[in-house]
Image (tube, rainbow, N blue to C red; front, side, top):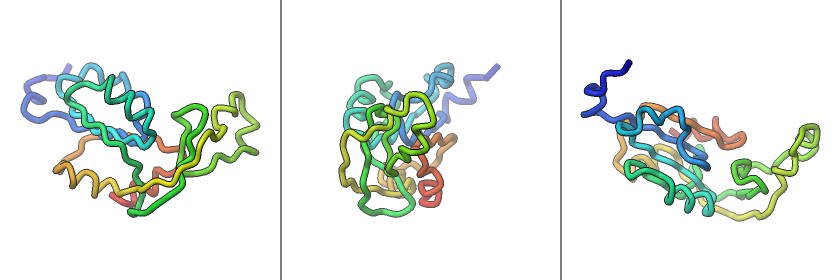
Length: 144
């Protein structure tokens, strides 16, 4: 059992990179004590997050990488499969539901580092980081 008085003065800061769908339900128990920082580059998913997220969450419409630069972003049929890497269709064809990786749109977007984005929002401490970005996780961590 958690003593809630420990979290009253020091909320948990959870960073969710690739936040389509919102913060995982396993954190529900802690919601009164959670400040969510959600990064989502897909504009449609970003708008959904704005509508479903609690007031303690900060939703940022940005993609992250190891360095600030411009990249191609591949929006796929299933929004959560979108990525800055083109899907490997030959490999994915070996699995069921490979069509969820079909590219619907490609756009050129600006990416920034995690550290830079957190600094812009004056966030100095993070307790947990979840990154689900279809292969660019290490690149993002190298920019933090």
